[in-house]
Image (tube, rainbow, N blue to C red; front, side, top):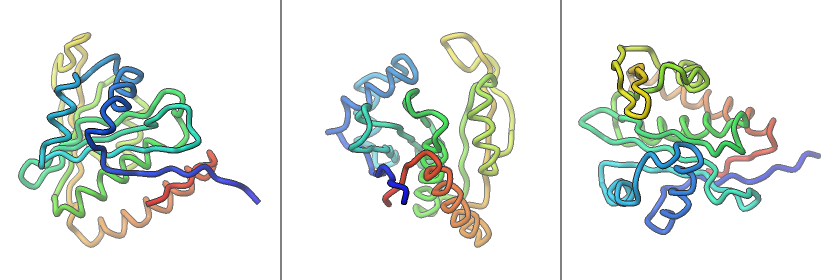
Length: 183
């Protein structure tokens, strides 16, 4: 019999801000400031989700954020601690962001991703995102271009079935790395 490590997904709060900043530093080298995250946490138009496990060395294993803008979920962050890459946590976060967006009644999702971030692009494509364009020299740190990705029809019955399928795929992938997502 295989034992699993519990993963808990929750909405992040101001009490989580030090763990958020630690994860931001590990993943992005300090992309957002304390004030930036405080604004996100306080905004009614922002959903900031985190993955936690009592068995992990990092306080916060991953986080994802989107802004609700009209009918759109604009995904601003998807980050997994480098120690926990390639274990299905990014899939779990992306699934959770899309499920939350769908539950909020949003129609579509969009995001920007570095053209060099092939792992992220592959993940987004697996979830049905399509390339809608390119933002030239979007990233200030190195002038790299960003791809603009879109996913439509979040309110269609077909998408609800897709969400159920993804839940099973995500759960299976996590279990291969001995994780179990508790929703």
